[in-house]
Length: 311
Image (cartoon, rainbow, N blue to C red; front, side, top):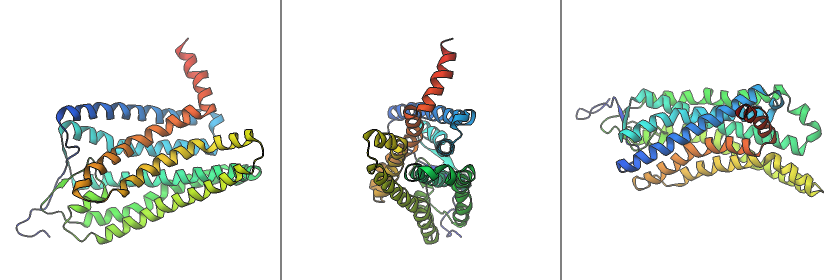
């Protein structure tokens, strides 16, 4: 219960960015354009993989679900963020805040695990090419996809249950543009150690360990590539995993940068800026990389889309 001189918070105030109105308008327009591009490109990837039977292979099926996770991640944050930027702040109920954090965590967990399954897929394709079709069959593919989505659905509700038990008295100001775990816990008047340790455990289990597995996979891949005698063969082998490697570097690079910034009031601006880049950069880069570098996707677009445009 709150103290007698404190009022229990019923609404949170998301501050967004403390910029001038002109800068906020410019930021609004840029983020809106990027969000439209994210929607178009990721939906295009999902559509192409769904209708083109040539793309019904594990690598593209994983890519399709990565695009779905990117759409969930951005759509959960950006529309509300655009409103906050335009209005120079916005309110959200504690329940709505926790639900936003739930889908935020679900998207991150799924992205991390799908990137791990994609690295495992590339490892099998390059290091065990003769056994690839046997090891990575459709049953294994969909099992990995199911586990990638199910992990978040299973783990996150326990953390959300703890959040609903927290008390918020006095301050209701969240100095961020969405409901992340750190700013939520900063304004809680309850003991938050259990939530902090659970969040740390989840980060180790679903973000750090997958990163280690990806790193090990690529060490094995690089060793296998170096053993290829012909330069053409090495270049062809590396090209099959280069797009995924760029995606992994972008995803974990921005994610690590967020946690590398020390917590504190003076660093909140840096955290929000990196979080903004993380929110819009990876979901935009992923479909661009795979559509530009991928021969099958480029060929389908040139054959069908461009054909209808110039008819």
